Image 1 (tube, rainbow, N blue to C red):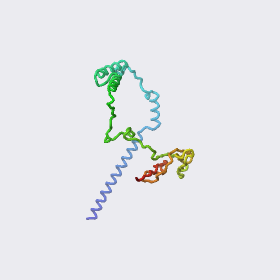
Image 2: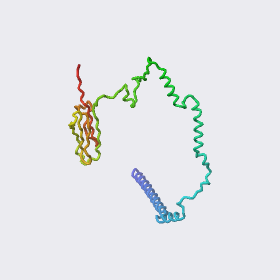
Image 3: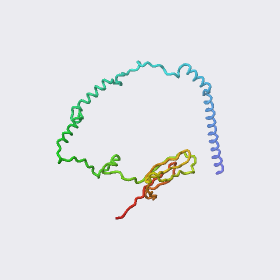
Image 4: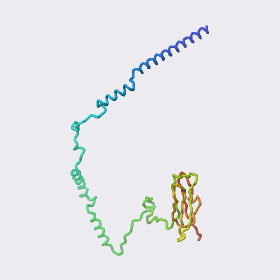
Length: 234
């Protein structure tokens, strides 16, 4: 009994598979028939050429008067614009917020200066150090620049070196005319020429803790150094 049941189930599965295969074959045949209904490339080209000759591709000529819009709404005459601007300025000039004549301000300042006596002092405005200054205030009287040169930073670009294995180099020679200065010369090789800079002749501080850098990376020669500061004890 068990064998007969297994045989019947196997026959049912086979029948279902055959039915699916037949359905797939019918779908493929119908799709082939539909593909034959499409036009060939030559027919499409001929159709496009005929439409081009008939003028279907060129834009149609349109008369501007057919559109209903008023150009005066979008265009402003210069005279009307100037008149409107004057009307807007009148209430501002009449108010006390804006001085119509700048000479009045200087006249008032001259009168104040003329009335000063010898005991009077003109004191400049003192800026509080608690306020962080802007970059434009870097070298104001309360933050003067250093009186001596503390070091140099050179970033020289060599992106098109022919010999990538040869690294650029530099040399330092003291000026014969003035030993307070020296010539810093950079050499990289073709296609770049040598360049030189006149710098202060001081002892270099080659400590990496103090910012010394001498390396060539990504086509950039970076030479940063500071001069050695001699500290004296009292």
